[in-house]
Length: 108
Image (cartoon, rainbow, N blue to C red; front, side, top):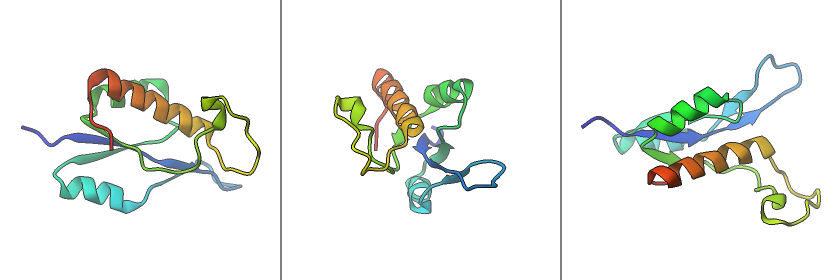
């Protein structure tokens, strides 16, 4: 039996002047997956549709690493401006959750 592939969502962090976004994750997530015998696979909101589809098809588990608040519009509430939201990350994580649910993949 091969080691399970655990998909971990990461944050995109853009700084003025950067040529590309920086992908951020607390190393403890990936280290924990490795210690448990899994292989961490990182995915960010900048992944294209083909990359997302491949990752969602191959994942044996999904780890949502946390971050900004979920956009209140997703549950029919107004955005009051006092919270930090990342709509692109929300879209990625909702798509990943949907894929995990359809495939019966565990979510952490």
